[in-house]
Image (cartoon, rainbow, N blue to C red; front, side):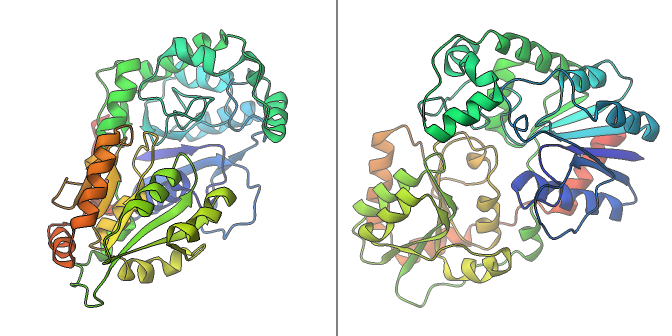
Amino acid sequence: MKVINFTSGFDINYPGGITNYVRDLHLNLINKSIDSKIISAQMEGVFSTSIKPDFEFYVDKYRRFSYKFCKANKDDDALEAYILQENPDVIHFHSIYGVSERFINFIINSKFKYVISLHDYYLVCPRIFMMDCNGSPCRRIDLTKCKKCISSFENIDFIRKLLGKLKIKAPKMENQYLNRRANLISDFFSRSKKILPVSKGVEKIFSDFLPSPNYLTLNIGNASADNFAKKEKSLKGSIEVAFLGTLNKHKGAELFIDIASKVKNELINFCFYGRADKYYSSLLAVNNIKNNGPYSPSNLSKILCDIDLGFVLPIWEDNGPQVVMELLNNGVPVVGTQVGGIPDFIQHLKTGYLFHPDSLIEIENTISWLNSITIDDVYNLSGNIKRLKTVDEHSQELIDIYNEL
């Protein structure tokens, strides 16, 4: 069987969530005797080259996350010719950043069977994160609101970039192109043999806007599950609570700092590992949060050994944050927001604590719970954690789907 894994916008060796996932999947498929090929964007950075893509195509940097699909790209002829030459049994789309209307229509009108994984919201939200022009989260797709949220001026990539650099909001002009964009994606979905949301929350958001009988929620696997470990009871007499990753607004920076400032439990020490926006970085120390700064993937296992409780607090509908999987697979209970894919992995008051970021009452209840917990409470949560899905198990699920097609 021949499968093409398609991921555009970034070089396959870029250290990002989707590309990390596709690299692991690709190697595992090959180990299972699947003829796996990779199509990705041309390399623009200096990364450790662990995988050589089978076909690279050019994506203009202004078009990479454009709100408007361009009509054609300069590499469309070569890209279409490569797919026709390879004649795959299945094409698996993981992202289509920067592709053209011409290429999407080529796929729609082709004989090829294809599946679509929904790792983010780009296909239904041109802003990707379902955060509107004012920085507030959207909980559903509403095309009427989208037309007002994304000005027609923002369809012009150069103007959008310039306005962003100058920190000027685009003048409001209702964006009629979004109807055309939605119709194109609807056709793309209707021809797909399977649509694979990475969590139940993601399926609901997409299916409410683009109904289809072909949705199948499929949580991804994570390499951390290969070394699942039960957490030992803390002997240090404290509860180390950590936020890992990027600290910015949509990742829940304000929520994290607000909660940390209001928790008075003397057992709890708050810390942060990762990169923080300058504004939020300045607020960490004054709110008794230790800033450990950036870390490399090679240090993650050591960091997770030192953590008793993890915070994953996006205010947007985060599709399936892999940091949740990494924490749980290292026996670390998670305090998480009840959005996107997070509820698929955390059992409230059994393996962690869930609350909705829009509810002031639930936030206050979370603070009260943190003020009351003991080392034994955290240890009991950890004891309930079970290993999540491995990459190998997940790839076998996909092979079964490919075989079914």
